[in-house]
Length: 468
Image (cartoon, rainbow, N blue to C red; front, side, top):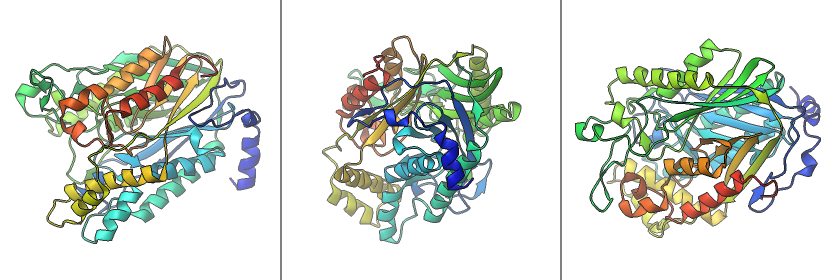
């Protein structure tokens, strides 16, 4: 599709765009008509080449590909300027890398970046991309690259091309539905063994062979897998699935995989080729499958089957109804860095060749966050509201409590939450957990004040009043 033909195609769907304005902290709070709603699906390959760094360069690079990584999404047309949702089978997109993804998809869809949500699924045998961190480690000359820039640019080219193809296949949306079902024996809280003061003593990882830890209760989780589906007549044309757990069975062997959540999604896609299936990881900063996963290879398929069964059960509860209105809201936040982060100290740590790779590459992400704050580039939170259904998009490795709060804020709305958007702040614990320590708190880039900042943003996105 040429630029001119795409412009004419989109012009039909964006007549009401002039009614929208971007406010300093909140935009898109006015209900939009859904009388001419269309959905344009897209997908493209984002599998890294042999030798590419995985998870920031501190695990084995790509040696083989067990199953491909994908970016999957859709463009929603007919409700003001186009809206784009996309899930990417990568560990993370941080800072300017996330901005560039949103900008590329916006350009192709004929919209603005603030109307694009890009969330990573967070598999670990996958790229963990921060362009600023890549520039920092490249200066050293003796560290693994964070990302191959030619590969990154190719992915953006594929994104634009895939959206353009998808726009030519846009389908009418006549109905929407939401449902949920319990997933059996997958999610468990990582921070379960504490002393009498609440301090975390030992943690369950993505996999765990410590029988004491595996024998402890699940802890705080969200056991429900949520599905939001769009229909053309009686045909389901797109389904977004949400569940909160770190999506790794095992990793670090150099074998690229979409892991158990990706395998479940791909099985469903094969069975329902007429529907675009998209999987979003919820607020899983403190959630993993560790209670149910000993890290052995057969468990990957077992966990995939459990996720698949949860999706099938959630879909069985779907009851399509008319689309009454569509609203898109955004809120910006720029939380301050932890007082303990020093640019000079971080640079010294990165430059010290006696340090391990993880203790040199990881500080490059911290330094990138400090530089982002200097540039005052905010993180964008967003929510797509379709009638009484809300699809909330949050950044980074947010704790499960944010997802549970969002459901309470929804005040009767069906709220499905995707985290792992802009990964700039790394982990986002709740304020109460900062004094309790543990891995996630130790590597969080922001102080506990981030809780109040993000919670306020969530409230503005989920508030029912049209002038929120």
